[in-house]
Image 1 (cartoon, rainbow, N blue to C red):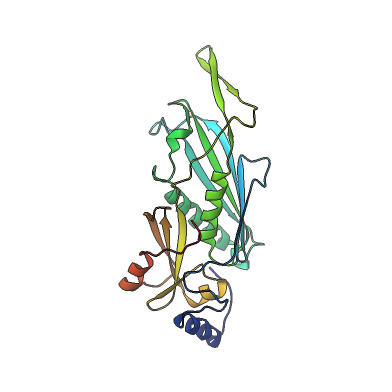
Image 2 (image 1 turned 90 degrees about the vertical axis):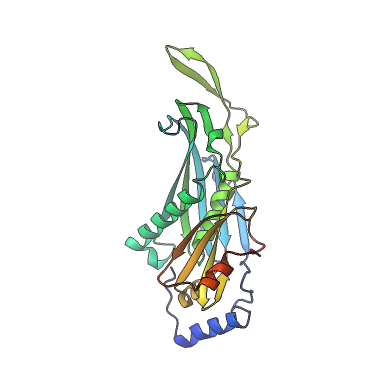
Length: 266
């Protein structure tokens, strides 16, 4: 994902450091960079969050609409993800590069939240078969400084946690149509339960048998292949995906899927 040109000597310096157990910025292999999370920044959205992880900066907003449910899921609400990779965030986002990455991120978020164990969408139902709440999650990539998948997943979980949906009451029926009242009391809101929502943890294979967590753009230049793992707060792996061209040795992949997980974040 990184569009940085490094000499072979620079790459060797980074890789040799990892072999010795210390990275260029002083972190160990399973350490994250400085993480900052802010919520409630966008007043026109039901929920929002901004996450900065190193030099990576993303903004997520959540808006709620009430719509008819799909016939195959009459009692479940919906959640949809839209990702925009601005060309100002990174040079590689120009042209098709940004579109392809946005599609990949959206698909991964769909998979991450598709299980009822991750998010109970039945709690978004207002009237079974007629009205459910639909959450539209918009992800804006403001700056890309490495490890985009992890940062976006953290931002989505934070934005959903911060989401406040006004409580909806059914007041009656007129001509076969239900009548609703939306509470204007700021204390009468419904929350989204994200206690079991997973996040993504990316392992970059920087050299044979060794991976690093939260790679920088320079480290991403040294390791062309990554495995992205969706994991719940209880340690349950919900999804995996390989990014980039290359292979993982069985023992390297197995080690990436075992505990201990990094202590931050989750």
